[in-house]
Image (cartoon, rainbow, N blue to C red; front, side, top):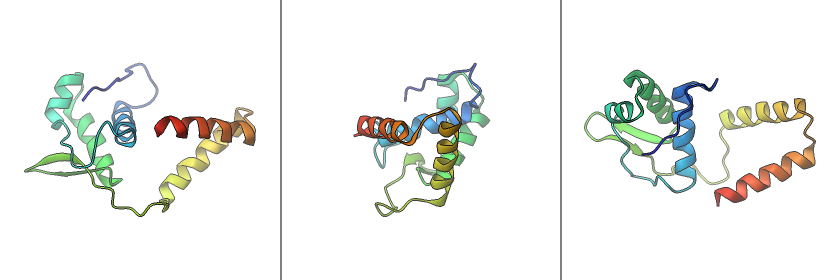
Length: 123
């Protein structure tokens, strides 16, 4: 698994790992059932503390993106949510993003145009 971590970013390393794994799943780079590197392996590969990787994996597990147990390790979770059902946590994140775009002076048309462009890149 190839991660690109920015150690000078304001985004915590565990959050960068989480975000990149979610993007990889969305883009089909990681597929349901695929084995993820162990916490120790990923920590060694990236040169970061095992607890940081563990925190990212725990967050991904809580959010339902991966499954993990002591015997088989971490794997990409099978899609269990019904299509079209949006968790409240994602709505809250989107609301915050919309507010940030508004504060940057981005109007509704610009926002939706950017959303369409980015969404189509995911397909």
